[in-house]
Image (tube, rainbow, N blue to C red; front, side):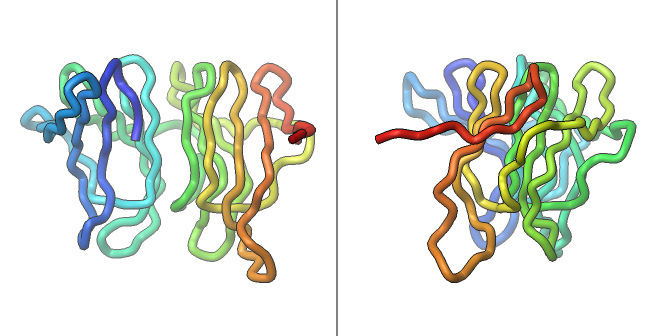
Length: 195
């Protein structure tokens, strides 16, 4: 789910079968609409458990789970004005197939963090440079969050904030920790929390 102007955009998901439909919720009128891609667009296969992020008029999607339960590692972009899909083939080695990860626009990067690759929970971070369309595994400093899936995340300025999730430890509840990735310093840190 992402926000474009005054409209929430939703792509794909699962309601008994996986979907590749786009729906928009116009917030001033609370009206849902099905968004029909232009004829001839290269529409991604149906999926769930993927992520999307919006910058300008572009909605990027990455990963997820196919109808055949295959983990996906593809990248697609949808032009929210022209209503056209395009499959991207970025240079470099990108993240492998995964689900329950997070993805955001941070600076000029589409950033993918964590998730589950079918065997392990992950805590890796990948940047898709939106100018060169190439994957970058950044050299980061500090201590990254532990491996996790299903976490909450948000971008605030030049920081990616990760909260909670599931690390697979069945002896306790879900994670209740907060981590911040600072883009200018390329550093993970854990802030002191009061209250």
